Amino acid sequence: MHWPAEAIWEQVAPWLPGFTVEVLPQVDSTNSELMRRARAGSLDPILLVAEQQTAGRGRLGRSWQSDTGGSLTFSLGLSLAPRDWSGLSLAVGLAAAEALHSQVRLKWPNDLWVGDRKLGGILVETAGVAGSPSRTAVVGIGLNLARPPADGLSTAPAGLNELLPGLDRGQVLLRLAAPVLATLRRFEEEGFSPFVEGFRRRDALAGRQVRLSDGTTGTAAAIGEDGALLVHTAAGLVAVGSADVSVRPA
Ligand code: BTN
Image (cartoon, rainbow, N blue to C red; front, side):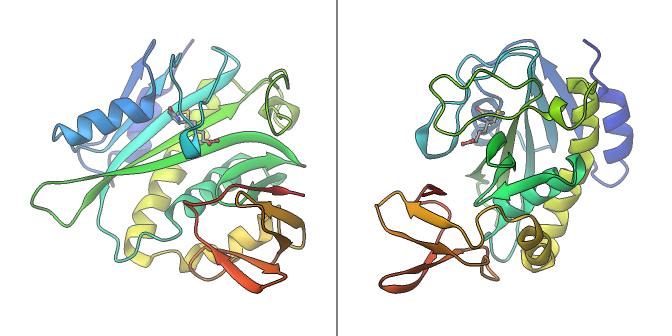
């Protein structure tokens, strides 16, 4: 397997000093590894790719299973000091969707969907930097290249090779890494507002019946300016923050 580490480094290093690319044959989770490094004080911007994860993690404490070869798993680590963190994970999802294909849609907050099937997921975590207003953002992306078996998955899976046949993991990473990092930098400067319209154009939930994880049902409206999911419910319009619910079409 050829990983285009040098090509990615050449695209990114000129505007992100100290940037490195690292490929590991195996790790528990690229997010866990970068969070450990961030907490230990290692702060240089990094792309960490794993050929295989043994304990991949998803949002809300779920696990992320991926089959070696059939999926791409990586994390980006970068110190950021935005005025407001709201919407960061949505902006990352949008950057990934735009870098991949016009048919990739966003299922709030940041799953990548093809039709109503899940192509990939994003896990954003942050670690504090002692004595600094910055935090290290660790942005993990897991993407199916081949469509995995649906067994045991709550949402039917999709594979990128349905849209882009023949692309290997390295080529997909090359498409994603620089645009996602550039989005993180832009978000730090400008917040979520430059990304609102782009998200709304790819929003897979707008106008759909949804069920929140607390059992509330309603109709999803467009996302708010801060990235909250707005839902018309029997009790009125509710703004849902990204951390506390999962949403699926009812
Ligand atoms: C989700 O769908 O809930 C998010 C899935 C995120 C998976 C990626 S794979 C690379 C990185 N390392 C992890 O352990 N998780 C993220």
